[in-house]
Image (tube, rainbow, N blue to C red; front, side, top):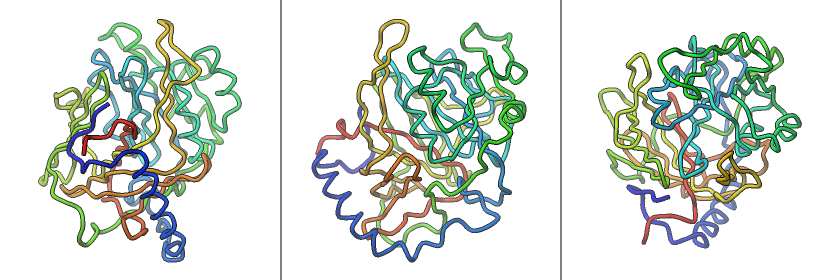
Amino acid sequence: MRVTGVEAGKGTRALVALAAALLLALAGCQAEDEGVPQGRSPFTGLPAEPRPVLAVKIDNAAPARPQTGLDRADIVYVEQVEAGLSRMLAIFSAELPPAVGPVRSARETDLDLLRQFGTPALAYSGVQRKLQPAIDAAPLYPVPPGRAPEAYYRGRDRAAPYNLYVRPAAALRAAPKASEAADIGFRFGAAPKGGGRAEPEHTVRYPSARFGFTWSAERRRWLVSFDGRAATTTDGHRLGAATVVVQYVRVHPSRYHDRLGSVSPLTETTGAGRASVLRDGRSYEAVWERRTARDGTEFLDPDGKRLAFATGPVWVVYADADDQPPA
Protein backbone atom coordinates (compact mmCIF):
# COMPACT_ATOMS: atom_id res chain seq x y z
CA MET A 1 0.00 0.00 0.00
CA ARG A 2 1.25 3.51 -0.77
CA VAL A 3 -0.25 6.74 0.55
CA THR A 4 0.36 10.08 -1.14
CA GLY A 5 -0.51 13.65 -0.17
CA VAL A 6 0.60 13.41 3.47
CA GLU A 7 3.80 14.47 5.18
CA ALA A 8 6.20 11.55 5.11
CA GLY A 9 6.80 9.71 8.36
CA LYS A 10 10.18 8.58 9.63
CA GLY A 11 9.17 4.95 9.90
CA THR A 12 7.52 2.83 12.50
CA ARG A 13 9.99 3.71 15.31
CA ALA A 14 9.40 7.43 14.88
CA LEU A 15 5.66 6.81 14.78
CA VAL A 16 5.76 4.95 18.10
CA ALA A 17 7.93 7.66 19.70
CA LEU A 18 5.54 10.37 18.56
CA ALA A 19 2.59 8.41 19.87
CA ALA A 20 4.24 7.92 23.27
CA ALA A 21 5.03 11.62 23.61
CA LEU A 22 1.51 12.69 22.78
CA LEU A 23 -0.05 10.10 25.05
CA LEU A 24 1.90 11.58 27.95
CA ALA A 25 0.49 14.97 27.03
CA LEU A 26 -2.97 13.46 26.91
CA ALA A 27 -2.84 12.61 30.60
CA GLY A 28 -2.98 16.30 31.46
CA CYS A 29 -5.75 17.09 29.00
CA GLN A 30 -8.46 14.61 29.93
CA ALA A 31 -10.17 16.97 32.37
CA GLU A 32 -10.74 19.48 29.57
CA ASP A 33 -12.73 17.02 27.45
CA GLU A 34 -16.46 17.64 27.85
CA GLY A 35 -17.53 14.63 25.80
CA VAL A 36 -20.36 14.56 23.26
CA PRO A 37 -23.05 17.25 23.75
CA GLN A 38 -26.53 15.94 24.49
CA GLY A 39 -28.79 15.90 21.43
CA ARG A 40 -25.85 15.46 19.04
CA SER A 41 -24.72 12.33 17.24
CA PRO A 42 -21.45 10.98 18.67
CA PHE A 43 -20.66 9.75 15.15
CA THR A 44 -21.22 12.96 13.12
CA GLY A 45 -21.71 15.81 15.59
CA LEU A 46 -25.07 16.63 13.95
CA PRO A 47 -28.38 16.89 15.83
CA ALA A 48 -29.71 13.37 16.41
CA GLU A 49 -31.68 11.29 18.87
CA PRO A 50 -30.10 8.14 20.34
CA ARG A 51 -30.88 5.23 18.03
CA PRO A 52 -29.59 1.65 17.64
CA VAL A 53 -26.39 1.01 15.71
CA LEU A 54 -26.34 -1.14 12.58
CA ALA A 55 -23.06 -2.04 10.87
CA VAL A 56 -23.20 -3.32 7.28
CA LYS A 57 -20.33 -5.01 5.45
CA ILE A 58 -20.29 -3.63 1.90
CA ASP A 59 -18.38 -4.80 -1.15
CA ASN A 60 -16.16 -2.40 -3.07
CA ALA A 61 -14.97 -4.52 -6.02
CA ALA A 62 -15.68 -2.99 -9.43
CA PRO A 63 -18.76 -5.20 -10.10
CA ALA A 64 -20.26 -4.02 -6.79
CA ARG A 65 -20.30 -0.36 -7.82
CA PRO A 66 -22.21 1.86 -7.54
CA GLN A 67 -23.31 0.98 -4.02
CA THR A 68 -26.73 1.62 -2.52
CA GLY A 69 -27.39 3.63 0.65
CA LEU A 70 -23.73 4.31 1.44
CA ASP A 71 -24.28 8.07 1.31
CA ARG A 72 -26.56 7.81 4.36
CA ALA A 73 -23.97 6.20 6.65
CA ASP A 74 -22.72 8.09 9.70
CA ILE A 75 -19.26 6.47 9.46
CA VAL A 76 -17.57 4.47 6.71
CA TYR A 77 -14.53 2.35 7.59
CA VAL A 78 -12.34 1.24 4.66
CA GLU A 79 -10.42 -2.01 5.15
CA GLN A 80 -8.02 -4.07 3.06
CA VAL A 81 -9.12 -7.63 2.23
CA GLU A 82 -7.74 -10.50 0.16
CA ALA A 83 -5.73 -9.81 -3.01
CA GLY A 84 -5.19 -6.18 -2.00
CA LEU A 85 -8.84 -5.29 -2.60
CA SER A 86 -11.07 -3.32 -0.22
CA ARG A 87 -14.38 -3.57 1.55
CA MET A 88 -16.23 -1.12 3.71
CA LEU A 89 -17.93 -1.36 7.06
CA ALA A 90 -20.67 1.27 7.12
CA ILE A 91 -22.21 2.42 10.42
CA PHE A 92 -25.84 3.54 10.42
CA SER A 93 -27.76 5.03 13.33
CA ALA A 94 -29.16 8.55 12.88
CA GLU A 95 -30.70 7.71 9.49
CA LEU A 96 -31.72 4.42 7.90
CA PRO A 97 -31.98 4.27 4.10
CA PRO A 98 -34.49 1.84 2.57
CA ALA A 99 -31.70 -0.47 1.38
CA VAL A 100 -27.93 -0.88 1.65
CA GLY A 101 -25.53 -2.99 -0.36
CA PRO A 102 -24.16 -5.00 -1.98
CA VAL A 103 -23.71 -6.88 1.29
CA ARG A 104 -20.72 -9.21 1.59
CA SER A 105 -19.02 -11.40 4.17
CA ALA A 106 -17.52 -10.31 7.49
CA ARG A 107 -13.85 -10.49 8.46
CA GLU A 108 -11.89 -10.90 11.69
CA THR A 109 -10.96 -7.20 11.58
CA ASP A 110 -14.62 -6.28 12.02
CA LEU A 111 -14.94 -7.96 15.40
CA ASP A 112 -12.47 -5.80 17.35
CA LEU A 113 -13.49 -2.70 15.41
CA LEU A 114 -17.15 -3.12 16.39
CA ARG A 115 -16.55 -3.68 20.11
CA GLN A 116 -16.32 0.09 20.68
CA PHE A 117 -20.00 0.33 19.67
CA GLY A 118 -21.18 -1.85 22.56
CA THR A 119 -23.40 -4.59 21.14
CA PRO A 120 -24.36 -3.36 17.65
CA ALA A 121 -26.21 -5.30 14.97
CA LEU A 122 -24.04 -6.57 12.11
CA ALA A 123 -25.48 -7.25 8.65
CA TYR A 124 -23.28 -9.45 6.45
CA SER A 125 -23.72 -12.15 3.84
CA GLY A 126 -21.74 -14.93 5.48
CA VAL A 127 -18.46 -15.80 7.08
CA GLN A 128 -15.63 -18.30 6.72
CA ARG A 129 -16.49 -21.48 8.58
CA LYS A 130 -13.50 -21.28 10.93
CA LEU A 131 -14.39 -17.69 11.85
CA GLN A 132 -17.99 -18.53 12.78
CA PRO A 133 -17.22 -19.36 16.46
CA ALA A 134 -15.60 -15.93 16.86
CA ILE A 135 -18.68 -14.27 15.36
CA ASP A 136 -20.92 -16.21 17.73
CA ALA A 137 -18.80 -15.22 20.75
CA ALA A 138 -18.48 -11.53 19.82
CA PRO A 139 -20.51 -8.88 21.68
CA LEU A 140 -22.78 -8.09 18.75
CA TYR A 141 -26.05 -9.22 17.18
CA PRO A 142 -25.34 -11.04 13.90
CA VAL A 143 -28.11 -10.59 11.34
CA PRO A 144 -27.01 -12.44 8.16
CA PRO A 145 -29.69 -13.69 5.73
CA GLY A 146 -29.98 -17.01 7.57
CA ARG A 147 -31.07 -15.26 10.77
CA ALA A 148 -33.10 -12.45 9.25
CA PRO A 149 -34.29 -13.62 5.81
CA GLU A 150 -37.01 -10.97 5.66
CA ALA A 151 -34.34 -8.25 5.84
CA TYR A 152 -32.61 -9.23 2.58
CA TYR A 153 -33.37 -9.38 -1.12
CA ARG A 154 -31.55 -10.04 -4.38
CA GLY A 155 -31.43 -7.31 -7.00
CA ARG A 156 -32.11 -8.20 -10.63
CA ASP A 157 -29.64 -5.85 -12.30
CA ARG A 158 -26.48 -7.71 -11.23
CA ALA A 159 -25.20 -11.23 -10.92
CA ALA A 160 -24.51 -12.86 -7.58
CA PRO A 161 -22.69 -12.27 -5.30
CA TYR A 162 -22.93 -8.55 -6.10
CA ASN A 163 -26.72 -8.27 -5.83
CA LEU A 164 -27.52 -8.91 -2.15
CA TYR A 165 -29.09 -5.97 -0.30
CA VAL A 166 -30.27 -5.45 3.27
CA ARG A 167 -33.24 -3.44 4.54
CA PRO A 168 -31.74 -1.74 7.61
CA ALA A 169 -35.02 -1.26 9.48
CA ALA A 170 -35.86 -4.94 9.11
CA ALA A 171 -32.34 -5.94 10.17
CA LEU A 172 -32.68 -3.92 13.37
CA ARG A 173 -36.06 -5.50 14.10
CA ALA A 174 -34.18 -8.79 14.20
CA ALA A 175 -31.78 -7.27 16.77
CA PRO A 176 -34.09 -5.38 19.17
CA LYS A 177 -31.42 -5.11 21.88
CA ALA A 178 -28.73 -3.54 19.70
CA SER A 179 -26.84 -0.75 21.47
CA GLU A 180 -27.71 2.87 20.81
CA ALA A 181 -25.14 5.30 19.44
CA ALA A 182 -22.68 6.37 22.15
CA ASP A 183 -19.30 8.06 22.49
CA ILE A 184 -16.56 6.31 20.46
CA GLY A 185 -13.93 9.03 20.89
CA PHE A 186 -14.79 11.44 18.07
CA ARG A 187 -15.01 15.16 18.86
CA PHE A 188 -16.50 17.86 16.66
CA GLY A 189 -16.01 21.59 16.50
CA ALA A 190 -14.12 24.44 14.90
CA ALA A 191 -10.97 23.73 12.92
CA PRO A 192 -7.72 23.89 14.90
CA LYS A 193 -6.09 27.31 15.04
CA GLY A 194 -2.76 27.16 13.26
CA GLY A 195 -1.13 24.00 12.08
CA GLY A 196 -2.30 21.92 9.20
CA ARG A 197 -1.72 22.71 5.58
CA ALA A 198 -3.83 23.25 2.51
CA GLU A 199 -4.46 19.96 0.73
CA PRO A 200 -7.23 19.95 -1.88
CA GLU A 201 -6.63 16.31 -2.88
CA HIS A 202 -5.53 13.19 -1.09
CA THR A 203 -4.98 9.64 -2.36
CA VAL A 204 -4.66 6.33 -0.52
CA ARG A 205 -3.54 3.23 -2.41
CA TYR A 206 -3.97 -0.42 -1.54
CA PRO A 207 -2.27 -3.07 -3.69
CA SER A 208 -5.39 -3.45 -5.85
CA ALA A 209 -7.51 -0.42 -4.94
CA ARG A 210 -7.20 3.37 -4.88
CA PHE A 211 -9.19 5.98 -2.96
CA GLY A 212 -9.26 9.65 -3.84
CA PHE A 213 -10.65 12.51 -1.74
CA THR A 214 -11.08 15.94 -3.39
CA TRP A 215 -12.20 18.93 -1.36
CA SER A 216 -15.31 20.77 -2.57
CA ALA A 217 -15.71 24.14 -0.88
CA GLU A 218 -19.18 24.45 -2.41
CA ARG A 219 -20.43 21.20 -0.89
CA ARG A 220 -18.24 21.37 2.23
CA ARG A 221 -17.33 17.77 1.58
CA TRP A 222 -14.41 15.60 0.49
CA LEU A 223 -15.75 13.99 -2.68
CA VAL A 224 -14.82 10.33 -2.90
CA SER A 225 -13.36 8.50 -5.89
CA PHE A 226 -12.73 4.78 -6.33
CA ASP A 227 -9.87 3.78 -8.63
CA GLY A 228 -9.85 7.20 -10.25
CA ARG A 229 -13.59 7.41 -10.90
CA ALA A 230 -16.18 9.49 -9.06
CA ALA A 231 -17.93 7.36 -6.44
CA THR A 232 -21.71 7.61 -6.56
CA THR A 233 -24.69 5.67 -5.28
CA THR A 234 -27.23 3.85 -7.44
CA ASP A 235 -29.51 6.89 -7.24
CA GLY A 236 -26.77 9.21 -8.49
CA HIS A 237 -25.65 10.83 -5.24
CA ARG A 238 -21.92 11.59 -5.03
CA LEU A 239 -20.26 10.03 -2.00
CA GLY A 240 -18.62 12.54 0.30
CA ALA A 241 -17.37 13.07 3.83
CA ALA A 242 -17.02 16.11 6.06
CA THR A 243 -13.95 14.53 7.66
CA VAL A 244 -11.58 11.89 6.30
CA VAL A 245 -9.15 10.14 8.64
CA VAL A 246 -6.20 8.25 7.19
CA GLN A 247 -5.28 6.06 10.15
CA TYR A 248 -1.93 4.26 10.05
CA VAL A 249 -2.28 0.81 11.60
CA ARG A 250 -0.60 -2.59 11.55
CA VAL A 251 -1.91 -4.84 8.76
CA HIS A 252 -0.69 -8.43 8.70
CA PRO A 253 -1.90 -11.90 7.64
CA SER A 254 -4.64 -13.44 9.77
CA ARG A 255 -5.32 -17.12 10.47
CA TYR A 256 -8.04 -17.21 7.82
CA HIS A 257 -8.17 -17.38 4.04
CA ASP A 258 -10.79 -17.30 1.30
CA ARG A 259 -11.95 -20.12 -0.98
CA LEU A 260 -9.08 -19.47 -3.39
CA GLY A 261 -6.49 -19.75 -0.65
CA SER A 262 -5.74 -16.02 -0.39
CA VAL A 263 -4.93 -15.08 3.20
CA SER A 264 -7.24 -12.51 4.82
CA PRO A 265 -5.40 -9.46 6.17
CA LEU A 266 -5.98 -8.52 9.81
CA THR A 267 -6.08 -4.81 10.58
CA GLU A 268 -5.18 -3.96 14.18
CA THR A 269 -7.33 -1.05 15.36
CA THR A 270 -6.14 -0.97 18.98
CA GLY A 271 -2.91 0.59 20.15
CA ALA A 272 -1.53 3.93 18.97
CA GLY A 273 -0.06 5.43 15.85
CA ARG A 274 -0.05 8.30 13.38
CA ALA A 275 -3.02 9.68 11.49
CA SER A 276 -3.83 12.45 9.03
CA VAL A 277 -7.15 14.20 9.58
CA LEU A 278 -8.61 15.95 6.53
CA ARG A 279 -11.19 18.67 7.08
CA ASP A 280 -12.12 21.95 5.43
CA GLY A 281 -9.61 21.46 2.63
CA ARG A 282 -6.68 21.06 5.00
CA SER A 283 -4.67 18.17 6.45
CA TYR A 284 -3.78 17.94 10.14
CA GLU A 285 -1.22 15.52 11.53
CA ALA A 286 -2.45 13.63 14.58
CA VAL A 287 -1.84 10.66 16.80
CA TRP A 288 -4.55 8.08 17.41
CA GLU A 289 -4.98 5.97 20.53
CA ARG A 290 -7.37 3.13 21.33
CA ARG A 291 -6.41 1.43 24.58
CA THR A 292 -8.57 -1.69 24.31
CA ALA A 293 -11.16 -3.05 21.89
CA ARG A 294 -13.91 -1.81 24.21
CA ASP A 295 -12.60 1.77 24.02
CA GLY A 296 -13.22 4.33 21.33
CA THR A 297 -10.43 5.91 19.27
CA GLU A 298 -9.07 9.31 20.27
CA PHE A 299 -7.30 11.61 17.80
CA LEU A 300 -4.84 14.05 19.33
CA ASP A 301 -3.06 17.10 17.99
CA PRO A 302 0.68 17.77 18.61
CA ASP A 303 -0.21 19.35 21.98
CA GLY A 304 -2.05 16.23 23.11
CA LYS A 305 -5.52 17.78 22.80
CA ARG A 306 -8.48 16.20 21.01
CA LEU A 307 -8.47 17.16 17.33
CA ALA A 308 -11.97 18.27 16.37
CA PHE A 309 -13.66 16.88 13.26
CA ALA A 310 -16.00 18.83 11.00
CA THR A 311 -19.64 17.98 11.60
CA GLY A 312 -21.00 15.45 9.12
CA PRO A 313 -20.16 11.97 7.85
CA VAL A 314 -16.73 10.56 8.72
CA TRP A 315 -14.67 8.19 6.56
CA VAL A 316 -11.82 6.30 8.23
CA VAL A 317 -9.32 4.72 5.84
CA TYR A 318 -6.95 2.19 7.41
CA ALA A 319 -3.46 2.43 5.89
CA ASP A 320 -0.53 0.13 6.66
CA ALA A 321 1.88 1.87 9.06
CA ASP A 322 4.79 -0.17 7.67
CA ASP A 323 4.24 1.16 4.16
CA GLN A 324 4.44 4.92 4.60
CA PRO A 325 5.59 7.41 1.96
CA PRO A 326 9.37 7.82 1.61
CA ALA A 327 10.98 10.66 3.52
